[in-house]
Image 1 (cartoon, rainbow, N blue to C red):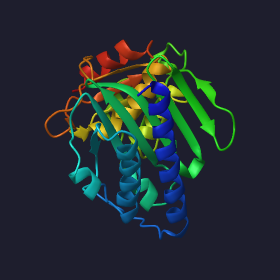
Image 2: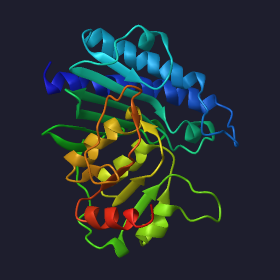
Image 3: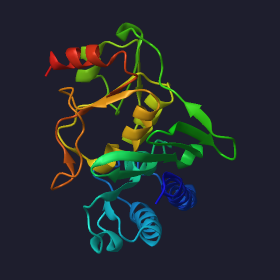
Image 4: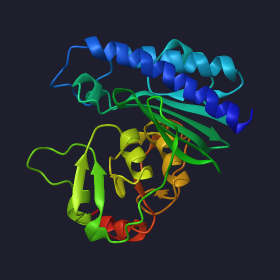
Length: 269
């Protein structure tokens, strides 16, 4: 398949999932104390819709996704081409009805991220990219706009985006980086898209363990927008571990700030 056909299929799958999620979101009763581990029936329905669409279009491709669903159980998980899906990234944002969640669809080719789609259903916004094609953002029925990371070169003037911290507690990355401003949101997809669109300069993921589906799609957005993505030691992000886990952290930046942020983070490990 050509990149155009891959991208078309991924965008269509994300759009269909977004429509389903928005319908459910309207009537979903908020769960204010939703835990980190929460999964809803909407996560599973979204995943089945996406995987079914991709399987029909690309029957020989592998599928990797977060939820235990029938289509995933019947699919192979590895191969030269593997679709990596998070049907609702930031489910707490969905469950708490903050609007901070996304649909993430990525494509690995020979283990390398080549295409990514991050759809934010509550905002009716999609940010997408493919290798060599740049990064683009489309809101509603508007025209796609090319995305580029910020040009900010001073860590002291930077905007850092991170997951929600506990009230009254400063996160380790904020203490290390000392940015000018901190934005907190659910969803790694949302955070990576913010870096790609130039709305944030730095996104450090310091969780001990996360998974391929948490970062694959957003990884492509940042690199195609001109930014840089590495693990917390400055090495490449590697995909397709036996359990699909990521255990070396992640740093996504606009590029000019990357080395200095890595240095500061390393001093607080």
